[in-house]
Length: 419
Image (tube, rainbow, N blue to C red; front, side, top):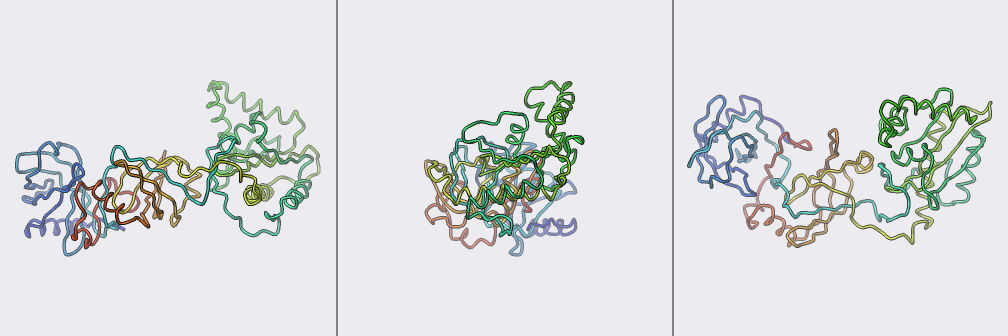
């Protein structure tokens, strides 16, 4: 993992690079251009260059890299002045060493399309889609629910549900679409509709680290998305909760059955009879487990076998690329929960009229307010595909010196994925 140099170490290494005339590479326009470090002041670096001036723009940030004592060094800083043979840049605040990449990252070619898939086949299904994603892997062994026998699984559900509810059902969306408000908000979010008590109304807090419940705030937000005027949202929430009480409902649970990005149905337990045990979080957990086991059971029992398969259609916005890997983004928080570091994924890159298929290893991910970012290393690129990508990304042939390179030196600003 890249580490930033302390101030004294930074000054020493930059000074040594100047004194020794170390070649420094400036990365611009998908090329690497040699420059030499000259005058160093507290806030500026002056460099000699022979680059085309069209590639150098004042106040734009550029990446620089060089090798010091067999250690890759890199920094990013802005150009403040450009002349025919010299350029002046701001003293970089951060200079990095111990860079974990072998190949430098580049902006993706304009024609690059990346698609990815993971955890087996994915399907094109006639069910409502959701913001959630569940790859539907084999569940942990459980004494409560056995996925192998579908009839036994349903009997186990009925027996459990009878303890807590006066009504129970497994509702599938194969023949109909979500209709009432609770069905629609559950499908949209992929979260559990949970009414612990009708008198208490919708839960105000979701106790789970990964959001799992339709809270009162989430329901209100959904109403706004549905077009309810902001000033009427609170009244609509109150009306909805009053309607549940007027229907004689004491407590209710609707757990979506999620298969990949689809809600194929839901598990419904409703209680209208006083004296039944409360539907606390342990009960919710039981039926949440059942819904996951049921989804897996449907898969292994051939429920989806006639459905057309998707290959690589998960959306990916490419941030940057290299000959060794790719950084892309996807907005789904639920996908981030399923796609963890160490996961292997299938990649398809299409650029320059060529389609390249390879496996990738997810090295790390991180998120900001809108997106989740994934850093993926190629695992099994064919030699001819590797050379094609290298030439496409770097604008030159792969050399013996590249093959012997200790490590890559690319950095983002700020550094991404722990680089």
